[in-house]
Image (cartoon, rainbow, N blue to C red):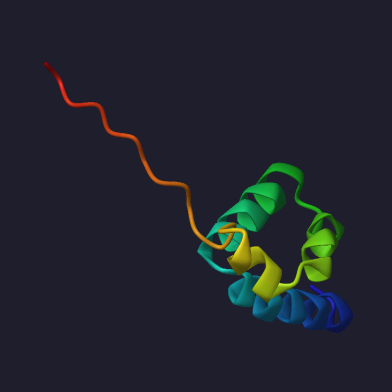
Length: 68
């Protein structure tokens, strides 16, 4: 990875961590699927406080069925 891409990745990582574990997981899935660092740029426009306010910083609750 060239130094410019490495610096870009580091900045994105810091911002993603501030957005919470859900954003990190979604970004990793995006990167794994497409392999293109530019696919993560839209995450930089997200505000950590707004993401937290709407609950998007956390994974949704898991619904576990109880057998009858």
